[in-house]
Length: 87
Image: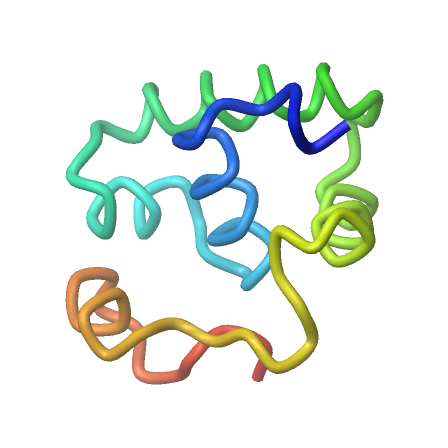
């Protein structure tokens, strides 16, 4: 299933699973939010879900992310977040 995702879709799924909004993901990946929404929608369709919470579970199951994953310092700075993802 994860192999059906493009590298960009995997990046978006990972960041969404860490709780980032489309605006934050856009800042991190240097994309406009509408492009992020499109990538996320395509990834969710490929994975057979329309729920972000299930997307997070699938990201863990498919090893796109894990429970120890967190935003890198660069991702944190670009997103404007003060936390690292899961908290």
